[in-house]
Length: 118
Image (cartoon, rainbow, N blue to C red; front, side):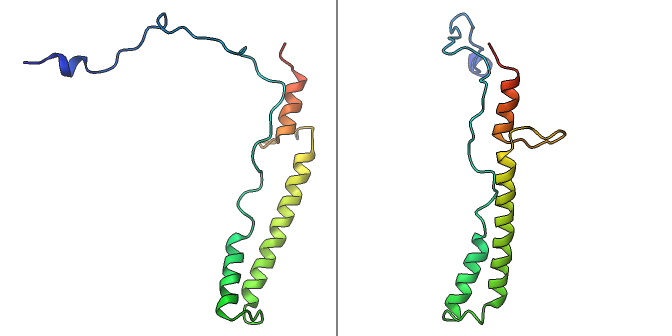
């Protein structure tokens, strides 16, 4: 009877003395945050554009037959332009807005610079 396999198959926790923690850099917060990625959600009006191009291809590029799709694309484009303008204005603000749950990287960097480490 092999009783060692079911009972001792699991991994035992490794001793901290065998693998000491090596500090490569000091464990402190930086005084700034780098901006990663775009704040604008989605890819603009990609779906409306594909619907419009499909309609134009089916109607042999007669834009008078695709007025509904064209109006939908223009409406989406205006909404996306307004959203990108608003996000650009919001990103340019350095001071954080009180009682706001969403902050830009500039605002977080400003807060971290108020209380620097070291």
